[in-house]
Every structure is written in structure tokens, then in C-alpha cells.
Length: 208
Length: 251
Image (cartoon, rainbow over the protein chains, first blue to last red):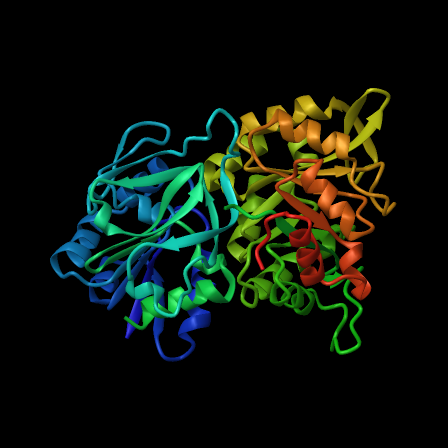
């Protein structure tokens, strides 16, 4: 089996690569590439994302055919895909960071700034917060409710259909921090930086 | 609920830990990778490396340290010391650092902060402020505390937030190394002034100081070096103590 981490030249993905390689050991091949054929032929895809919604979408679009390839992979062939942080946010129809930007539109909804309640809550939301698991998700196998995960973000994904939400976290309000829709998975937190428990989530995804 | 973070800091010189944990069972007390792993296994919420390598020839040693550490530790890793340019930041991130802290370069050329946060995202840009009290205000120092820029630390903090810093690492130079506690006044004033998280640093001598940094200094995270070194306190002891004082921590 092989898992491809999409390298679309946006942000720092070395921690994602290190964590997947640590979990995969020799059982699974981890590819890091933007090569469309390699993405097409892989069993699973990881879509990381750091920086702003707009910068990530721009970077995706910069690579000709990448969005189409990802659409084909996740929507037509329904193969497992995991979005991390802005990777998850890009599932939305639109993001509102900097300027209204069209997302991948895989899970209907929008990405907007966390309400900091007039400065009561600092942004970015940085650090360890507990997740409240609201539905069984395959990537949460053997993950206890209220586990701590590492977050760094100022924007939140607000899906229209609440049934896709698999976990929330409490910061200013109940922020969506994990989604599952058929073969599409996403975490707002960083499993690659969430210690052993985060590596377990990566293991769960790899073992799907 | 978001937890307050405890961040142990390791001083690294020419690729070796200068002050560190002095455990008898440690194979190589000078190995930053092994020390960072002990901290992360012990529950550290993040790890910080401060590169104090003086000579330029040995500058590259930190990249090797970061690369090896990021393959062993799966909590956020912040690296600072001698970061001059967007290219330095890029190199550290590529080696596996999650955040880079910028000190002198941010004062001399604030554009470095703006450019790098635009390029890599503000989540990985930490501006380190070394502040020293001068009568009724605090001034920002550079070059490891040797040069006084004369800049007002509170105004500077606000400016760095505008420039795109994701966090501020505030060190009181009056307190650093004294073990008498953080400069609470400085921490709380800066924390109230900005909307980004503040990491308190400089002066921790006991676990109550960590409590004060969070409760009175309003810091989101507390950084400490010497209390974790030589086995005086473990990260776990610190967390248990904070929890007993009603501070939310990840245990």
C-alpha cells in the first residue's frame, strides 16, 4: 500500500512527513509528491495545509491539473483522503481569510474567523485542547473522548450539514475540529504534532 | 478548554546542549535529540531550542539537530537564536522546526516578520522580545541582550502583532538567570496589549513562579530552562503542581 502526501509548495510539511514515516515504518510506502500520476495511483492521500486559506488554494491551483486529480481521487473514485488544518478547511465551498476564495466544495460550508468575543479569546487558537467526539469516526478508533490535540488556527470550518462533524473543541464556541464524510476525513488539529495520540490517528488513517 | 502550555528550553551550542537535564541514565548528556525526547515523553507541550552558537562556521550544526529531533519528537518544536532572514526560517522549517523565533532581526528589519509570516503563515512565526526595565518603561534589547535598541517593549509588541507574529516570547532580562520569578508586570502589560498568545520567559526558580506567570502575568504558556535541568523538577511535577492550583494543563 502507498500513501501520498500532496506537496503543493505551501507551508511547512516536514512534520507531516516525519510523523507518517514514523507510523508507516516499513509496512506502507509514504510518497511526498505533486506528481498527478503518482497521486492517481496511490491508495490514500493526505492533503496538508498551512498559512492562509487563499494561499493554500492558490498554491493548489498553481499546479496544473492537481485540483482535478484530487477531485477524481476523492469524489469519483472515493478513495480515502485526509485533510489537515487548512487541508481540511479547503473541503469547504468558500473561505473568507483575506478575501472570499473558492474552496474544493467537497463538504458544503464555509470557513470563517473564530469569534474572539472582543478580545476575550486570543487568536490564533494555539496549543492543546480537548476534542469532544460527537460521532464514531474510523480515524478515532481507540481514541478516548476528551483526548488532547494540538491546534494552531484562527479560522474555523462551518459545514452546512452537521452530520459530517465527528468532533468539536471548545474555544469561544464549539469549533468543528474533525469531519468525516464517506471517504473524506479532516482534522483541524495537527495529529502530526499531537504526540502519541496524534500518531494513533495517523495510524488509524493508514490502516483504513 | 485550551490548556496552558509548559515549554522546556534547551540551550544548544555547536550542536550540543550546554545546560540540560543531568540524569545518570542519560547516555549522552550533551545530545539535544535525547534531551528533547525525554522532555516530550515527560509531557512537555512544546520543545524550544535556543541556538547560542557564536561562530558562523558552526551555525549549520543546528539544522542537523532540528532534523534529527523532528524525527523523534512529535510535539511542536520551536527554534531560535541567530535567525536573520526569511531564508534562515525556510531552512529551519524544512529541517522540521514547527516555529521559528526571531529576535534581533525583527528589531533591525521588521519586514522579515511580515514577509515570513506571509510566506509561511503566522502560526510558525514567534517574535522573541528581550526586555529590560528602564525607569517606568521597558526597552527592547538585541544581540543576546548586549545592545539597547531604545524601543519601547509594549509598543514594539503591538507592532509585531500587526506585522504578523503568531506569538510573542517575552523574556525579562532583569530576571533571566536570577531564579526570582518572571517580571509579572511586564508579562501582564504585554499580554493585555496584544491579542496573540504570550509566552513568559526569564527568571523561573520554582513551580510557584510558573503559576504566577499564568495567573498574574496572563501568559498563555510558560517557558523555563534551569528548573527542568539537573532534575530539579520534571515537566510532570510542574504540570501536576499547576493543576493543583487550578490551572488547566494537559496531563
